[in-house]
Length: 388
Image (cartoon, rainbow, N blue to C red; front, side, top):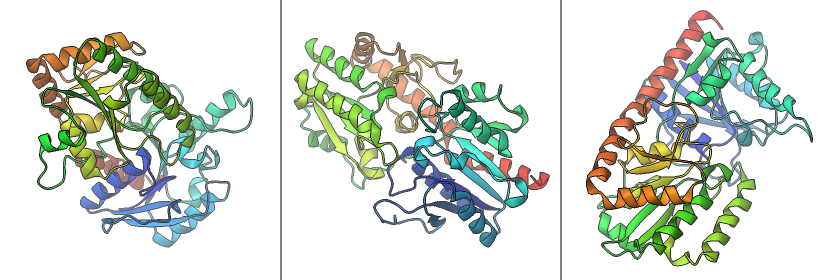
């Protein structure tokens, strides 16, 4: 098939939606499909290496009201069979134009893949109208993909459930550290002693991810005498959501106020190989999401793929794949004390940590890109057969 993947961000832009689109494009190409990325010009002007198996078309001049005309013209030129909008409001500058899917006679079938259900900005006090715009995208699309059970349960009440598909995301970071990787040497880079406990946090900082609880838990552990350090892996904020910079600055102030500057280390924005090396160096990955653990979180999938012991927060809806104490440890959101208790338990119990590491690897096996691409392609092929 000739598949067009529409995305508001794409590498070298920094963001999970762009990374997901790149991984999906490569996986679809590996199955023999033609993958075409349709996006806008990168702010940096850079074009990443290693994209020979997918075609990247930076033809969209902005995600305002003219964007669909530019997409449709390219779809006609390439004779695309399907278009798939990778939707996250921030990736499109919070503009609602991408939500207004053209009529079917004007373009190939349009799929909407929701990476979350956050609403775009319309105008002050738009209120319920903002959710109406998101729902419009779901209703006008020929098919809808959600990446997690929470969004599936919400949308199945809003649209025809026959066109709703639950297809997860995978890890954007392959388990592939640099050649000659040595875990002890990697830990020494951060000034760690052999008996230090290294907590890992991967991903951007924003209000939903519990950065403040993480720092407070670190402070509690240090006061208890645990030789704990924190390694923050990756950049602080992404290209599409710079408003999170204020929250990241708040977390930095908290680190300074609590006297933890010498115990918090940062990789900064790093290559996938460097991120992989850093993840493998950690003892416990701590992901205190305020809205509960979810499989829409690429940071979680990366930690699982690397076989890390994970301490995170209880999900907002039942997730049968998660076994508390088997493949991760769950705590209440917004509770630094319980978070510290669980991190201390995992770090001091080698048997539990080994169980969590094995459980994480087993769980991650269900989120491979080949499996995700096969399910996605099967959905696309069904639309093509139906002529939608």
